[in-house]
Length: 103
Image (cartoon, rainbow, N blue to C red; front, side):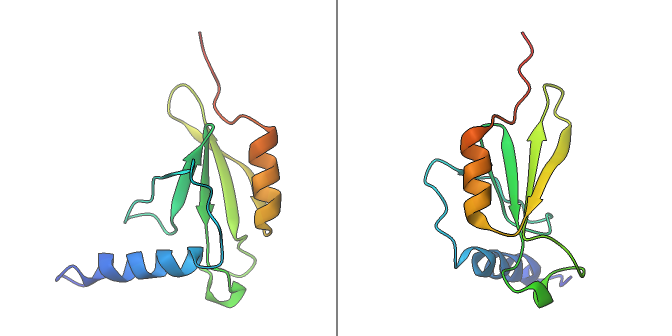
């Protein structure tokens, strides 16, 4: 990490590269955070992390491109699914609800 702030500039460039080949739906909220390894979006209680398109550029061998997590009432998150294909992510999110509602 560099002291002069270039770390966050390079993270942002990397995040844009991760998303370049995807058409992110407009109703997905960008909740990306500079300390996270990948950019992420929130929709219907799911947080979706998006890794590099090129498998050789990912943090470790066998790492999936998409990680889908859901949040419970207490703010705990659990990885629900991992996938390689964005169309599968869109289908999963449209057919499920990620947040646990406590009344």
